[in-house]
Length: 540
Image 1 (cartoon, helix red, strand yellow):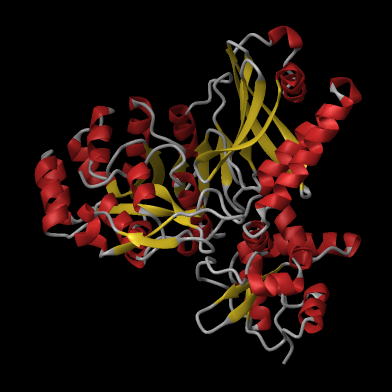
Image 2 (tube, rainbow, N blue to C red):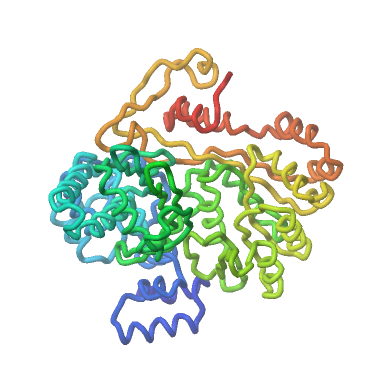
């Protein structure tokens, strides 16, 4: 029986429409490119959509577990460069090693598997970007550091007049992307210019240069942002983009005039980054069930809370990607959109043009949406428009900066929303933080602190540090507190009985606090007591 074609699978799964598929097929006749690549370029499907279609086409399962136990022995056998070029990630799967690959019909991958006698290993599929990012985890720091040192040496030999500063700036941007950094900090002091990357929420020193390079490096980034030399002493918020791995990465530049010169922060936004399915973001099964209940309600307000950098937007993108289809219209307004979601209309805040969350929301309602994402509820006007949208039958997602799930109701009330309306429209709240995961290659058992033994036992794992990690940690996962609003809770909310509501949630519903959820990860050896105390707070 002839295999179902990938375009037919995507059509059947309602990831593309018939006219869209025909248009992509016409492009393929002209260019000869793979259909999946064309559809991705057109932002009609995601990497995950293609992988799921390939899974059906070739009957190879999609990898759905965590990727904590990378098989170093097999990577050394195959060669890290071959793994990166071919899109192959060997991991341990309980019973032994398995291969995660990016395509079941790729000739290069097949040749690597055959040449290293690996054809007897079970194979799974994952998006190329997922494989690439996990392979970066096992590149030794010594190898990465030597590349940086070579660039610095070239820069010092040639000086600022050697024309190497733009090349060095590009190198720093690319290294930050390879390390999966969210920000680059360039900070002057009396003697040096220090460059640090924010990786997994922590600033990591990368390189220190002599102070005389500073103004010239700043000038390179200012030039990219169309900021003139005469404006060096001002505060700036600007943007530029740079090419990386066949795509363009947006950079938000923020600068402030410090005592020793302009201090820069470069926020990296890769709009073509793959959207990870919700089930692969590290949520526990109980969290996923609660979130699924919230999503299944066709109208109402769903709020994700937590500080900046707690994964709220990543989670919301995963949700929107999972519910999008030809049959519903999804519109977002963000500041700015961080990742492009196929099949979703994404709009950006523009303060200069007077486009704010509240008036964007009012405009959205005239575009007949089913689902709306509002980047953040910041003020009374935006809160009111969100409530209005839910009352007219829409499903609305947004974020708040609050310390707990329950406190979200108080924050909405502070923003002018009456408790009776909160009770009417609020579907649920997900309060989360991100904790760093212990490096699987170097974590070690230590005696548990006395005050934690009743929660986690006599021993726990702690960070050590090795050439594959940063200070004993690699990667992050969420600790979560969910609040699904049932009918009894609605009655309490309607009367503003928040203390009674909080008592009911803990004593009768048995909801876990953030600390309880975090300590469970400590007990399982996923993270450390020190990390939990840093992010969530500990037992006093």
